[in-house]
Image 1: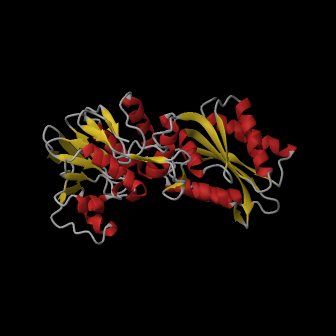
Image 2: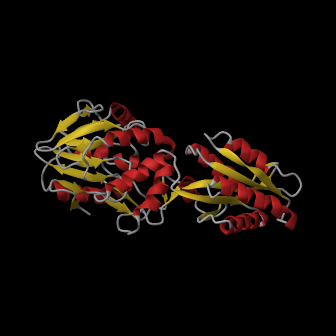
Image 3: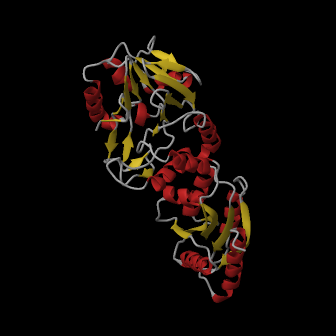
Length: 392
């Protein structure tokens, strides 16, 4: 698939609808796109390649778009294999071409392409450097940890196009039509979520530029209502909530904790919380639940005790939250234990390792099954969550 982004910038990326797990962990039922671009001027620049999985299709797109011309540069914004997978082949095919990248990316090249000779074939650029292709001038801005340390982004001064590497990316092949926000949020928090401070620095650099198109390495090109997309990225990278509501994430063995989670959802809804989301950590997609945890302003975790510790699906969830820098939220706790409840103690210890996370009391302890005499403390926790949500 090729098409013109602008008169001289051509999309030459590919869709991967055969992949089941992105990065071997994130479910992508609607596939993923690997985006690549070509700038045709007096000098020709390839903007990233694609994953080797779709290398043959990409080569076809590149060849058609070049129409007999030879590229002068390969701009590598990100060394991750799903974007730089065809780099060595490009160098073999076009021996006069130079790789343009950050210093760290250039140093990484032999790690991925051991038998490729890069001597005299690289051009290191730094923050604020430029490269003139003719009428088009490229400006380079370093964007370390968005989401690898070697990442840079590129701004085409002529057509006002911002190539944002993994920034503003989204799960889903371009052949699948859906709203941008949900899969972009899931992508952001699971891929870049830990590095909000670094994304904020990138947004500050972008704010100085007149941008007409955002061209990410995954997902659709963004050309309309850019304030909306940039505004969401500002919210996400600032770890602010989008919705004043509650996510109830539960991990249940025999259904007793599930019942408690469902009852808590009822109590919150009756008290006016307009959005309450339930997540079964044993069955629901982890990456989607992580994204929802960041989307919502509050969280309740409910889990069974297990082997004098915590039921593993909850442990995994809290570990992922910490890994992705979950912060600035208030969290309620429900534990279940038939003879020696200990889940709450472990959950508290894990939550206390996260920045500015406040435990909302009381902690609810149930024994095997929710009973009528547990309802008073359940209602008390619901009231406390209501107060923290700003409903009182």
